[in-house]
Image 1 (cartoon, rainbow, N blue to C red):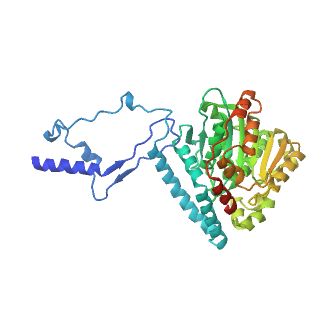
Image 2: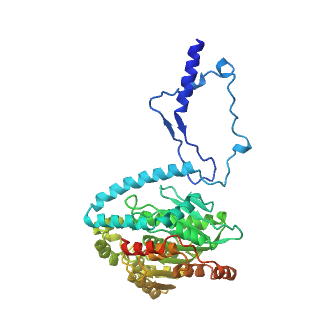
Image 3: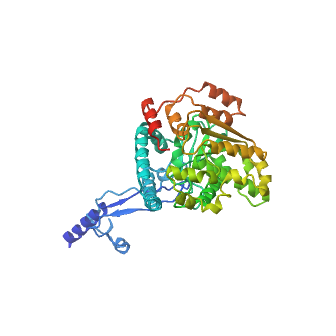
Amino acid sequence: MASGKCRSNKEHQRSISKVTIYSLPCSISDPEPFPLRIRINPQVDLPSPAMDSSQPSSETDPMMKNQPRRRASGGPEHKCNVGRQPSIGRDIGHAAAETYLITRLTFKLLRYLGVGYRWITRLLALGLYAILLMPGFIQVAYYYFFSSQVRRSVIYGDQPRNRLDLHLPKSSEGSKPVVAFVTGGAWIIGYKAWGSLLGKQLAERDIIVACIDYRNFPQGTISDMVSDASQGISFICNNIAEYGGDPNRIYLMGQSAGAHIAACAILEQAIKESLGDSISWSVSQIKAYFGLSGGYNLFNLVDHFHSRGLYRSIFLSIMEGEKSFDRFSPEVRIQAPAIKDSASLLPPISLFHGNSDYSIPSDASKTFVEALQKVGARAELIVYDGKTHTDLFLQDPLRGGKDELFEHLVAKIHADNPEALARDAMAPPRRRLVPEILLILAHEISPF
């Protein structure tokens, strides 16, 4: 009997060694729940809970009397650190779950697109473009995953993509200005991490950046995207003080498709306020809106996008049909007589665009500024000569040194803070992240 019990105990220990239990975050401030996952060797039968209760203890089994006791958890050294960062294991699990979701949605998307010559060549160009910029991407990714200044995947809503990343300055003294950023991605491949480079560099100038994620097509359509962005802005307006942000100095910014989504969100909010509807955040809390390389009139863009490979059928699906173009074209909607009172509620608007942008022509920003000025809104357009769709947002920041767009943004954000402006004037040039030859090649083969 003793030898049988010994074999049973050894078999039980071997079975336990086949189980890998991933540790769970126990902080109440963790941004989202993550399920316990147990990987079990299928060739080993683990004891059931009922069997566990009958396992021999050190008091009844002589084989276990001399086994070292494990220290019970729950002492001070085991208490959860409320402010700690999520574990690397948890991040990897979250990334794996998102990779699965993105892969599934990609196959669904390809059924809409079809796989033709134009898409194959663009995907190949995109792959080569990413390889050329990889030295910079690796450095930014290291910052994103390992810097204590980044709070990843803060939950702001109940949808799967209702998450945002916070990029915080090193100094925690005083309340910081905040940029709520909505990233681009052709309404299809947008992701909050795309704003990491902007977040890193603005955080170096003592500015908090909140990168808002949102549902992409086909997971959602344009009304879902605008709703998600608005909910993310609401979270920032009502909670950013907890992270050291100044709720009275919030700036809204979007790039490419994100500029369109953010413009729709702030105009929708202004209309709600002018009609006296119930709101969770106010346009008056936004000090300025910055639109980078955006498109604001769907009627003028549908044929252009079709010629660039974003075919009319899928564009109409994203935008919920041509019947919705009026609602989701800020340039058109702002001119409607029924909402003329909303224009006065809008914050100052600055649009930035390169005149060599072939993805969204700079005329898209020009006509929107003209429409805004016509109804009395405060709006300006800054055009950059020779810049493409990605130069302003990627290549120029990766080049380091000083670039016009970045300095323009910082100057506007710090306009009412002479001390910050003085520090900006003395700030050293930003570090180069990618060799110049690779940036030149990326500029030439960019599919955007």
